[in-house]
Length: 503
Image (tube, rainbow, N blue to C red):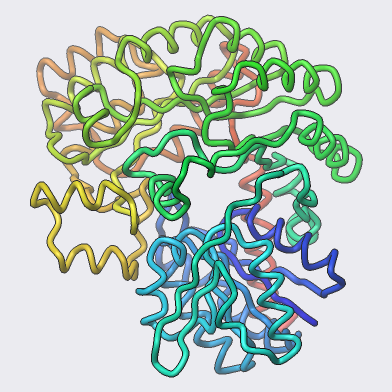
């Protein structure tokens, strides 16, 4: 049986886990990938993207390969693209279309209304997708499989979820060959890995607030054993020659015992630079030393806002400004490159609140405070909060659930404002600008004349280079550096142009 996996923009761990399961069961798999040139979370150049779009290439390739099942990994931001491409593939091949991922899990009833997918896979998909594919292969009715949804005789069937996988060590390692064969540099430049699933927190704007709702009972957050993670990395070093590691765990440092055991093993057996995400409350003197000694090159710390009431009551995040200040001080004393997350366009926050955040960032410097706009993702608690406050109408919520627009949070989100973007760009530069200059700009309101376009991507590259050259902060880029992006764009641009020329 042939299974085509389809996704866009980035390496996809969910598909890699599914691919490993399918290969273990003796099925043929193949990846069809839209690289998203000039159309991604950090950049939107519609004219260039249309020239370099791979949609036609993907549709023709799938038609030629003749898979039995075509499975899409779907997030809300790529849902419109998924619908358009899936419709074309269905008309060309008649294959069974399956949508899985965060978006179908969040709002399965809306996805079923669109009538494009034959089946949805909800929540963790390894067991459900395996059972679904087996049923399709045998020609059996698959409408009753847990963690799936479909339409039968005009009726939506949304089956209950089975408990999440309890023993993550029992899962096969993700099939990195799936993406390595597509683009070796994507795997080699920064090996993407999860040492856990879920999140101990349930921030209102995050998809994890949705997963805590669909997986009630506090059992969704689980960790792999340190030895299991090390085994995957040892195999990756031998097979792919990886250069660094990106841990995409939501909060990497929340368990001090696990962290100490793992990082000591990592230092001795892996020894590659790595990136991870932390919460301010989980940053201690000991954890920073462990991270530094083990080779942590870059870290992402969530601040979001300096308004403590907004942080706790609207965003649902634990912690206060004192814990943020303490964490920043500890991290600044190390050689770790510090990214901090700042959210703009939050409910109830205007220019004065963002100015407070600007002054805080100028005083408690990250190397790069990355600014993002609030994106109302379907099924998240902040959508309900915005409705209660009269910010969103029923029609707007329906539009959010339908997710036809491309609104990534690094570019516009749902709340973009040109005036606030000017302030955001100044926040973005607080890691390199003197605090006195920033405060002067704020006092005199000179930021109103500041650039209002999106600076995130170029500033990441320029600040990263500068910190490498002048402060000795090596490997500051958590995924691709400039050369990696250049190689990636050249690879796919040439492939697209050669394909258009019929070569």
